[in-house]
Image 1 (cartoon, one colour):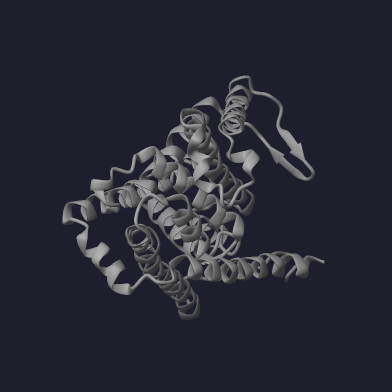
Image 2 (cartoon, rainbow, N blue to C red; image 1 turned 60 degrees about the vertical axis):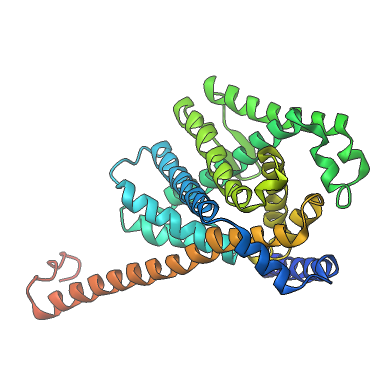
Amino acid sequence: MKNVREFIWPVIGLLAVIVSGWLLYRELRGMSLDDVWDSLTAVPPQRYALAGLSTLFAYAALAWYDRIALLHLNVRHISWLFVSVTSFTTYALSHNIGASVFSGAVVRYRAYTSKGLSAPQIAVLVALCSFTFGLGTILLGGITLVADPTLLHRLEELLPSMLTNPATARIVGLLLLGFVALYVVGSVLHLPPLIIRKAKLEYPRPAIMVRQLIAAPLELLGAAGIIYFVLPAHLEPSFIVVLAVFLASFSAALVSHAPGGLGVFELVFLTAMPDIPKADVLAALIIFRLFYLLVPFALSLVVVLLFERARLAQAWRGRMVVADGSVPPPPLSSSDQ
């Protein structure tokens, strides 16, 4: 049964890519590559620069996720530089390959065990980072729906009509904000941990909770800003609309388990932005994938190779020292003699 569970999510992700790819083809047929290229070249250099700064801002906030989790574990001896590089590598890989494959566990385990953290500590760190992201999505989702409950009209082709109703959308937004409020109360009042089956979820200290509520929205605002800055300025798409559509698209991509959200992210975004030419939206999404996904992915592979090379060289030097007899082997215990 365990083997079945290991394969079911990759299969679901593959099906999501196939279905969304077919739907995207229907959505984009008739569009030429020249249209997309014209949209890409029409973006002013300063807007590309702002998109690049948004990318750096988003990844800096992601590094804060790890730092917050380490503070929760009372681990303070690891430098900001090491944490930032580890976080960057983790998210660059998981965003592209799929959260279900990496989810930060493999990269973080290799990195943080070299700094003395145990496997249970790393498991808590991964879980808290994932929850921080979810908390930020819920918080911003609630704020956008309460501020403008008509936003779900943009997804009326993908959602039931009941959910796209403004009254229902505002209720959903209030429920999302209510969940965040309960989390805040639980942290402030030091409520007992929630036990769901075998999982035990402890409320973090208020100082940690406040950091979570700041870091996660900042990361999402930075990621959405990449797309916002490269959309046509003369069409004046409001940032709250771009943010809301980004949250819906990114969440759908994660739930689909498609590698990198391929196809799913684009399909939801294009469907929700009918007031902007498809070529312009697609160009913005290409830039987003390049800045937020592909370039970080390439850099993360270099980081992983350098890290593993350094670990291998360290292990080899240790073996050579022992082989040369420079360091005497540990003495035998009485039971070994």
